[in-house]
Length: 168
Ligand code: FEO
Image (tube, rainbow, N blue to C red; front, side, top):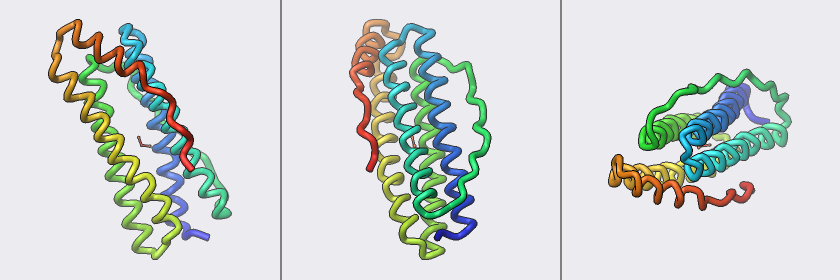
C-alpha cells in the first residue's frame, strides 16, 4: 500500500495526464481548422498517448488497492497561434510535466516507495523522448518560417506518425 500523500500526488498526476490528453485534442482541433491535417493527426496521436499515460497511473493505483477518486478535468484553451506556436506551447507543457514528474520521483524516493519510484521512472524517460521530438519539430518549423511549401512538407511528415503501442 502506498502512503496517502503519495496516493494524492499520483491522483493529481493522473488528472494532469488527462488534462494533457484534452489539451492535445484542443491543439489538434486547432490544426484541423487551419487545414494542417498532418499536424492534427500527430497531435491526435499524442492525445491517445496521454490517455495511455493516465490509464497506466490509474491501473497502478488500482493494483495498489487505492480507492481512486477522479477529479474534474480543466478546460484547455480553444485558441492557439500558428503551427510553430502550437508546438512551442506543447513543449512548454511537456517541460512543466517533466518538472511535476521529477517532484513526484523525489517524493517517492523520500518515502522509500520504490514501486512508485519505478513507475515514475517510466514517465521520466518518456518525457525525455517527448521533449526531444517536440524540439525537433520546432527546429524544422523555425527553419521554414512562413514558407508555405516548407510548412506543407512538415505537415505531410507529421501526418505519417503512427499510433504508439500501449505502454506495459
Ligand atoms: Fe504524459 Fe506528454 O506526458
